Length: 452
Image (cartoon, rainbow, N blue to C red; front, top):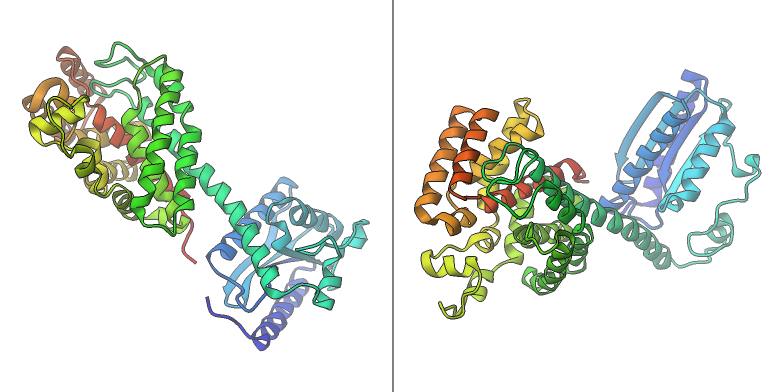
């Protein structure tokens, strides 16, 4: 963002004062003026804007909880800083109590500057509430005293501002990513009916697990997904390929947690890999980029770059142990590794567009999820299916899924497909993991911030 001059700031302050006086005259009630305390010539930017929007939302929420409505509210974004004005029919002292509580208690409150003007135009200060003045950003002295004496260098004030913003938003973003990942797993297992898969009606082609096994597993993975997001944040300045080694260590620990939660049943091993990398990808990106699924998927692909060649290098029938390794040797299938390394093409080209198209048509999350699952199954890339029934079974199920999707799936037709798959002991578990990723990318879009 471009720096502003002292003249710019003085002009902005005068214009703001004129707007305040106009509102006081128009409504005859107190006016709240909200700006940000930002030292230096750069007054706005993505993180500062985000902090301002947080303060605006918190203030509106507190006013609503107090039973107060704004007769007027306006928000403007300028190079000289973000500003908001509110005209509220209430006692000036009551409004000041609300703003002081936000300034003193919120993690970013020290950066909030919320003035309350009486109808006559005078500011209500903290002393009117019997409160001490605001403290300095860096020390415990009154802020006004430090400002007049220039007690602290500009770079110190700026560094503290960045620290407050980083600490607050890092924790918010980490928790959001982890919560959305767990929500995605819960939504996936609850989608019903899912052919061959565990859902709310039955256990599909699985005899060692049910929906409660999945709920226990998903609940145990929150901290893992949070750690993946943090790993992404910690490595933003490193090449993406350097993120994978620490993620794999976290994944091994997460698998152990999963087995403890399920009594030794593999419910989410594939999702631990793919969704964990997606969480790290979201952590490496600014929150504004969460609104672009292709950006998150591309970052996941960069993190996983080279994983197929590295994991399958020198693999022989004597050393192959997992079903995925044997499928690679037999058919050249790369499974979830290949999907993630390629940037989740099945999710971006089939699953997510189908999910969001159905939602746009008014379908609920369950029915949209059923359609998205069929779209993923129709790609014919489900190695879980192929491991159980071979290439021919995989192709037949893919064709059946495509036909059912084209005809418009109903609960009855999905149940019929479920019976068909169960009779052959087939389960599209790989598609289920990709469905969770569809939900995750969809939820990220909803939680994205607008670009500054």
